[in-house]
Image (cartoon, rainbow, N blue to C red; front, side):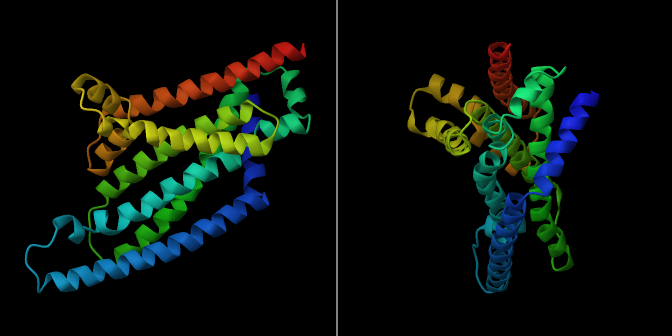
Length: 259
């Protein structure tokens, strides 16, 4: 575990001192500030208009759906692109710089390499989501609301981000070209949502049920609606493990080729 901790600290320090992270944090802050302020203004307008209107949509008058869900959906969108951009330096860049060969000859297993690098990547995504939650916490000064649905939504989006991280790390393990790794990561992340939406395009009850069970969209929607199921957590962990396993296999094959 000492080797894992050393690699984890090295990668995490590299992330938080890199210009790329500060650029991402800046972009995220600008987008969060614009979209959240607009959402709050629109919500305040809806509340004032609701006093004079009948039959307003209940979801439009719920700050969780009207503001926070849109705000956290932006986090999910950023994760799709941020994960591959961050992951490309973890393995692809190391291969290009020949520092990857040092890891292959060091007394550390492929699983330890993948686990430590993956945890550092997930930690950065968690920091970005915490930045988004700062805006939500500030709104407690203006409105009274139940934080539990928003926390569940944030947890669901973080788990989806963890899946993006696993797929992006796998993409980074496939090549020594950072741009290729970045593109493959984006394709995998977008493909995850496209696959999840296939259930809406089939009338076959059996196929529809199967696709819903393996759909990220369906599992995330449950958490957005305030429903927490153990099967949802198991699903996300299984997908994460699968792509980390694939990345580990690629790294292990590189170890055998280098010996």
